[in-house]
Image (cartoon, rainbow, N blue to C red; front, side, top):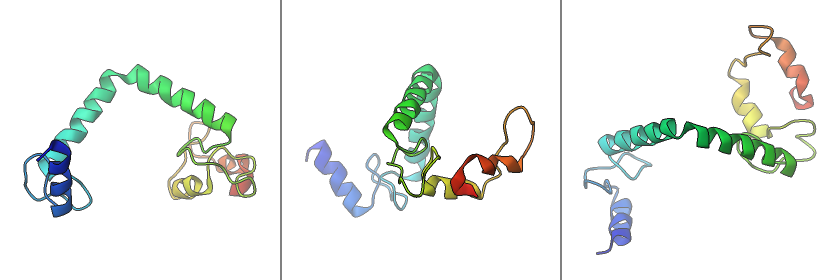
Length: 120
């Protein structure tokens, strides 16, 4: 059985693709391997931080030029997202979280919501 067929078989049966233990629901790996995978990815991103920082900056600039959400990259709706740089879904996701105000005010500020017409 090839590597791809092996992984597909394990995925279909709900077992870890690395050790054949029971996989966590919604994932391809067991808890042990999922933890190690995430840890190694985080470590890799920390060692290549400049690349990811530059990539995120260039993506945000490109997304703004293309009329896409700066957070998720989906196309902005011309009616609902006029004057905003993020889509409705991303704004709704952030609304429940306390948003830090402009760095010069040093705290939370209600004027943040005045910056985007969709937040009014």
